[in-house]
Image 1: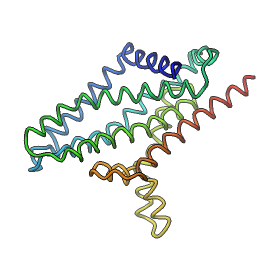
Image 2: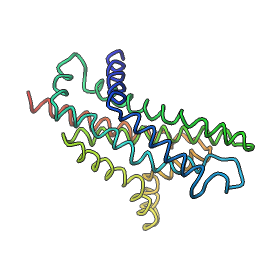
Image 3: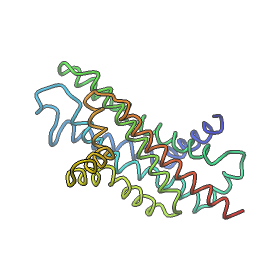
Image 4: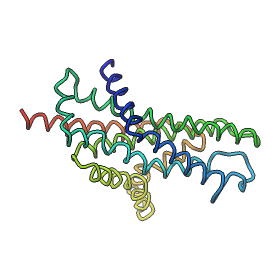
Length: 242
């Protein structure tokens, strides 16, 4: 765990040293704040105290932000040769991946914590469903974990950040949109299977305040699958080099 924490701190520091963290947090807060409070289905037009407009905006914003965050985490290290240097140290591929995963997740959590004033403001406006709000944040974190797993896998496939970004978006599109569309195009068990694979099915359930074990297992499974595939890519690379 010590090695994982060392890598986590190193990655988190690199986010802030390269200004990526500041840009990501500023744009995230700016977009979510604009669409939550000023434009579209803003809170003042709903007639009730709710953070659903914010969660709807963040649902799409994180879909684009997380691939932008993870695209460099392995691809850039492969391109610059620092990944070889890191893997020569007494750390396993899993420790490297978990360190990078934790750093990306911590940055997302920091961005979400900075939106707590939204919650407090809505609470001041009127009675708010606290359970639904905290479940909405839980859904954001679980969804982010799944996207980070996918992003790290995409980043492990190439040494080109743009390719990693587009690959991550392409895979994410299946879970965000395509499985949803396929579920509406089929009937019976096929429709149920595609519906189960859709992120919106599980996220909407949690954001309504219903925390079901199958939804948590769904997000954790995608996360684990993404990290496992990334580890298998790194392991294969080590075998070829040996």
